[in-house]
Image 1 (cartoon, rainbow, N blue to C red):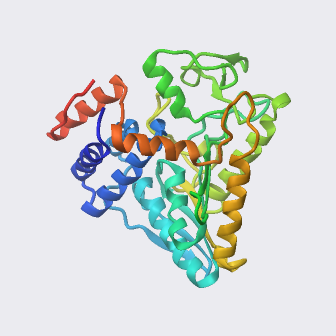
Image 2: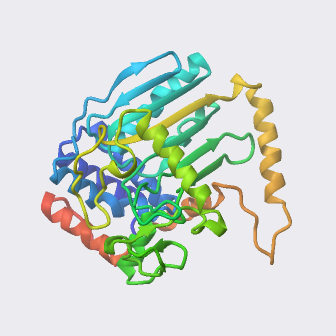
Length: 359
């Protein structure tokens, strides 16, 4: 087990070694470790080596000039200058929050960025301002749309964070695919097959091969197949891609550059600048008094939590599982798989950073 503080400090040291400023290294580490704390292990410190590979391939600028290149009172396009998405996205969200304070809502489309980690972190930034936060990002083409053999979309997640009063906030954070690709990476590290419905092989057949994407197959949209609503997952992924890529001037569809996953790193010729995000903040009191809204959100949350469960199971509100995991991991620590520990040890040796192997 590793304590979150220990992993965060190690991550900061790696980003500093790449040339990031102290403030950016701290922010990036905070975003990354928040994923491990919330149980989203696929987007946590297991991805650290991937960001280093982006740097090694010349695709990551450790000292970006993150700037607004177009704006109105409530909207803007932010250019991330090839910076860490872990830094670009929260800075864009802060711009959205500042615009929302003035205009009621703020909407920021981001171009020229990279993988931004856990979507929920950025959306949750709005909560302390009594705002509703929205976050989405496009990603490398690993997903086959319904009836397609070609990979055209990324896992393209959406996160929405809604404040409450006495109850904990509503936080929905999910990929528009059956699962995020990081779940396949975890299975690959464990040498395990994937459940049926997660992927198709190179010929378009359902498969349980956790390496299917590396072998010419693709991830399936949310719903898995047409009979179970895959066209809806496809539609969600397409919306995210258009908002994040087409609207901002970033790459979109099959041209989105890859993260350090699925066995390929070359970005190839694109149609825009880097990876795109879309973030937004909406003032609750732009619609009704915030206190009244939060009281009703408390009622909404309690009603769903008190719904009669099936077979004795607990009915959960989005955000509940992550909060429970975070409470446990802050006390007991974070368990890392052996391949992840070994990859961190390699980084430690490369950058001469102390690291304790704890398996």
